[in-house]
Image (tube, rainbow, N blue to C red):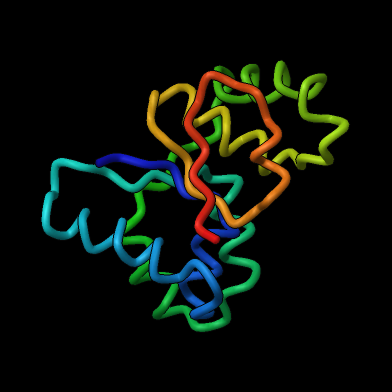
Length: 128
């Protein structure tokens, strides 16, 4: 199944933190079923790249995740989410992730607990 990964989920996986197994199951499922695609917004990719110090790990991850450019349409959706997510403290990167999931009509995986309070037409899956 296709999903959008929030940076928090990918980083939990790479750091073997709580929730890493849930992310691993999705990635293993992708390997077994190449028709499903694991997406990540270019904005979230920046967050991941800032924290991953090993270039080989980042390159390998880049072969698994489909990094989707943050274009005008996605930016418009992310901007429209600002009023409803502002009080929850969601960042631009959070909204970019949600906007991509909305565009693709697929669930989003995150480790951010505040997201459960977001009321949008997108499935949010907590990894921990």
